[in-house]
Amino acid sequence: MKGIAISYAVIAALIAAGPLVLGEGALRFSTECLLILAMAQMWNLLAGYAGLVSFGHQVFVGLGAYGLFLISDTFDLSPYWVLPVAPLAGAVVAAVIALPLFRLREAYFSIAMWVFSEIVAALVMKASWLGGTSGLPLKSSRLVDLDWFEPMLFWVSGVLALGTMGGLFLLMRSGFGLGLMSVRDNDLAAMSVGVDVRRNRFIVFVLSAAGCGLAGAVSFLGNLYVSPAAAFDVNWVVYMMFIVMIGGIGTLEGPIIGTAIFFGLRELITDQLGISAGWYLVALGTVGVVVMLWSPRGIWPPLRDRFGLKLLSVGRTAPATAELAPVSGKAGQLG
Amino acid sequence: MAWLETLVNGAFLGGLYGLLGIGLALVFGVMRLVNIAHGEFMVLAAYLAVILVSLFPQVHPLFVLIPVVLAAFAVGYLYQAVIMNRVARAPDPLAPLLLTFGVSIVLRNLMVEVFGADVRSLQLGELSRASLNLFGLSIGVMPLLTLVAAVLLFLLLQWALKRTQFGRIVRATADRRDIVRLFGVKPDRVYNYVMGLSLALGAIGGVLLAVRSSFTPFSGVERLLIAFEVVVLGGIGSFWGALLGGIVLGMAQLAGLKWDANAGLLYAHLLFFVMLLIRPAGLVASKA
Image 1 (cartoon, each protein chain N blue to C red):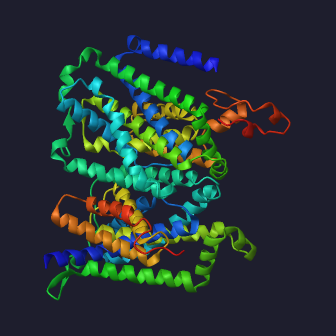
Image 2 (cartoon, one colour):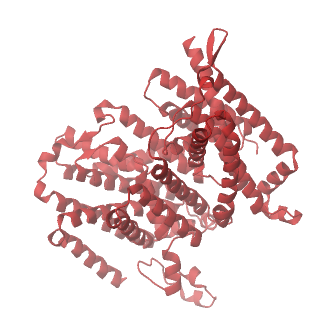
Image 3 (cartoon, rainbow over the protein chains, first blue to last red):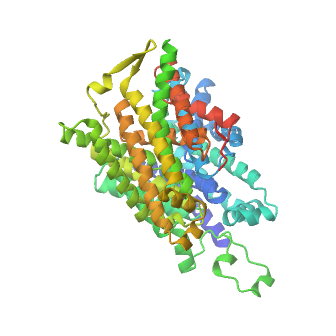
């Protein structure tokens, strides 16, 4: 616990110092990594801990971005001050659609989310007050000091990524998190001891929508431009999903590994080898499929069990009486 | 009268949509698996048809359906045998779902790289343009044939599942995969055949849809969403419900397009969402 707090503080200090050390290109790249990590963690929270696989999370990315652009332009406010609108937009929409969507289970929920995202994207493309298919520029960008724009975005992304990681860590150590993990491991047993699965799912769904809304808003703020094709692009959820799937679903460490592989592979293929983005997605998908066939829960769980690693372990020490019973490594560790 | 024509054409298109849905429903019914890559396999079948037509211009385009359907069956068999059966037994429903999604991404982007992102379509020459005049309505011959083919395939599939030895084995495996082993049935092999059958049905739908409207490597997403909506609208597990669901969706789409020319699938999606709110069990409540 102490080690985690210290490394957390060190990473926070590194992020604070980042813009002083990194060049412009590296800074932008790091911003993207941090944002994608935050989104992947949000998707992981929903899929890995609440068992809800969403193929429509791009809708929250787009809603956050449009929310920011619209409010910032309408009221002529600095986009930094309007940022809280983005997670709010995601959360409100998620809370409204949760009721009908939760009637559907498993794959049906997944695809219904996708259909919902397609509907919102089509409606935005038709709305002339949102710029239609060509999208919106950020007019209030003149309120932003452009010298500090990239560092600010980096810091916001850093706070978001660190906040997500820290928040999830604390959440998983709380009673609520224990409830979530018990549902993840055995929903029937969890319900029998009084875990309210429906309520948990609702809270997690809203939280994950809010996080993706904020990450999406920051991402498009960096472009100073938002278009429906980019904002509601299904590739957002493809990235989130592959990162979580390759790294380790239902673990906090997995998405970090997944993000490293995701960007490592991208730089290798599109930058070093100069091959098109399409082939990159083919390679990413193949890696994902191979990992799933080899270890359905991703790379991290087998590594952790094999080498006894404890990085962000949220496991608790079992009460003393538990020592009497032979507890296998897996049962003793809830994380 | 123009509206009536739109609805009739919508019903014809809907027959085709029913065909898209039935392959997805078959796999879900037997293996409890939603094959996210179903749409991509349909588009792949359409590309194969386009290639075969350009290779053998003297053969009538509809005859390419035979090799395409056979190839789709083989691909489905291998897909299930090599990839999907490895995770079919996983206790966690997440793994197969994510796996099929991964396969769909690989297929989609492979098609973009190999065939390019250009818009393609399958030309049937005169048959595409031929039309009949029935009760004052102008009706395309090809859409009518498509609906007839869809209904025939539905009847054939229902007969095969109800009356043949193969159908009984499939239904038994769907109910109790552990018990059928006692009777010498290998569930994995049944799954291979079912996936082959599902992709063969998908290939028919994919090729016929390619005759009706153009496609790109990205069309798989649209095809999957339609197939899925058909299954949910019809009532999960209901056979004729899928055909009815397809017809309702086809009508909604064409009526929407008539009212608003660049709406695409928006009204079909909206109808699906509204139906989800008011009738979550589907049009035909499932007894199975």
